[in-house]
Amino acid sequence: MTKKLNVGLIGYGFMGRTHSNAYCKVNHFFDMAYKPVLKVICGLDEKEAKAFSEKWGYESYTTDWKKVIEDDDIDLVDICVPNNVHAEVAIAAAKAGKAIFCEKPLALDGAQAKKMVDAVEKAGVANFVSFNYRRVPAVTLAKMLIDEGRLGKIFHYRANFLQDWTISANVPQGGMATWRLDVKAAGSGVTGDLLAHCIDTAMWQNGQIDSVSAVTETFIKKRMHVETGKVEDVGIDDACTFICRFDNGSLGNFESTRYARGHKALYTFEINGEKASIAWDLHDLHRLSYFDHADESIVRGWRSVHVTDGDMPYMDKWWVPGLQIGYEHTFVHQLADFLEGLDKGEPASPTFRDALATQYVCDAVLASAKDKQWKTIKKA
Ligand SMILES: NC(=O)c1ccc[n+]([C@@H]2O[C@H](COP(=O)([O-])OP(=O)(O)OC[C@H]3O[C@@H](n4cnc5c(N)ncnc54)[C@H](O)[C@@H]3O)[C@@H](O)[C@H]2O)c1
Image 1 (cartoon, rainbow, N blue to C red):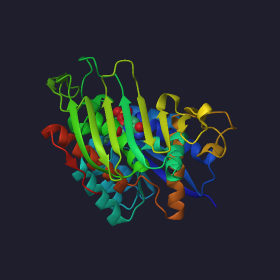
Image 2 (image 1 turned 90 degrees about the vertical axis):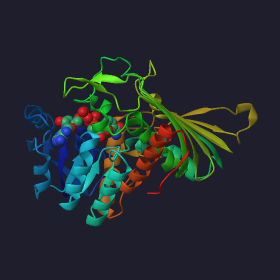
Image 3 (image 1 turned 180 degrees about the vertical axis):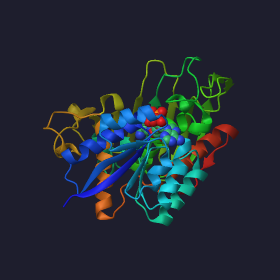
Image 4 (image 1 turned 135 degrees about the horizontal axis):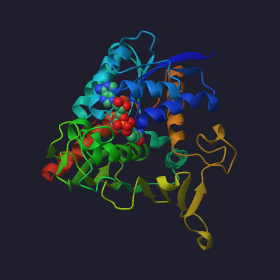
C-alpha cells in the first residue's frame, strides 16, 4: 500500500529544482512504500514562489518558512536555503516532529551542527543530509570494491574540487547564488561548499579522518555586497588545500578552489591500495577507472568501467545496459534510499550526525589554516 508523504520544500533555487525533480521521479523508477506529495514551496519572493509552484505542481506557496513548520499536514521539511538558515529551520522542524531532509553543509560550523544533531535525536525524527555525490553509481561502486577488500590496504586518498567562477572582482557577495561569497551566509568558502562533499565521500569510503594540516587563501579581499550596496571585506576562503591522516593509516590530499581557470565543477578522486587503485571524475561520472595489480602483466593497465549494467548500483532501476544516467539521478537515488529507510525504520546515511563529522573536519581545516598547526579531529 502506498503511504503519502506530504512535502514542504523551503528554497526554490538550484537545489529546490533538483529536489523537486527527485520527488516527481522517484516513484516512477523505484518501488517505494512512500509517495511524496508536493504540498508547499517556500522562498523569499512571492511571485517566484508562485511561478515555481505552478511549474513543478506544488499545491501552495508561501514566503514564510514558519508556516511550513506550523502546518500539521506537512510530514517532511526539505531545507534548500543558504547555509545560515539551515539550523533555525531544522531545529524548529524537529521540535514540530517533522522528518527533515537538509542540504549540505549541515550548518555554518560544528557548534551549530551539534545543536541540530541534538534537536533531531531528541525529537526522534528522521534526518538526512544531501551529500548527493555518494549516490553516483560509479562512486557507490567504488565504495563496494573497497568494502570487498579489492584494494587491500589503502595508502592514499586524493580528491580535488575545482571551479573558476569567482575569478572576476566584479562578482559580488550576498544575494541569490552569490550568498556563497558572503561568510555570514555561507560559513566558509570552498571548504564548506566543495570540500565538504569530498570529505563526506572520503570518510564514507575510507573511514574517519584523524588529523589535518591546511592552507587557505582569499585572492580577492573586497567585493561589493548585494544587500548593502557597499564594498566589504571578503571573509570566505577562495581556495583550500589540506593534507590529512586517516584512522586506517592512509594519507589524504585534498584541494579545492574557485580560481582554477578552465574548470567549472571538476570533482575527482583517486584511491591507491596495495592490490588495486580506483579513480573517478565527475565530468565522466558514469565511468570508474580501475587498476588491478593481479592482472596478467601483458594486459595489465587502467580499465575504464562503464557503470551501466543492471548489477551495478542503482542501474537496474533505469534504462538498459550501456545507457548512462547523470547528475540529476543522484538526487533521485538519495531520496529513494531515504524513503526506504523511513519505511524500514533504518535511517539512511548521511544522517545529521554523519554530516556533523564532516563539519568537524571542515572546522579543523579552517582552524589549521589560521594558526598553521596540525589539528586533531573532534569525533561526532
Ligand atoms: N548537494 C549539492 O551538490 C549542492 C549544490 C548546490 C547547493 N547546495 C546547498 O543547497 C543549499 C541551497 O543552495 P542553492 O544553490 O539552491 O541556493 P540558491 O541561491 O539557488 O537558492 C536559495 C533559495 O533559498 C531561498 N531563501 C533564502 N533565504 C530564505 C529564507 N529565510 N526563507 C525562505 N527561503 C529562503 C531563496 O528564495 C532561494 O529560493 C545550500 O545549503 C547549498 O550549500 C548543495
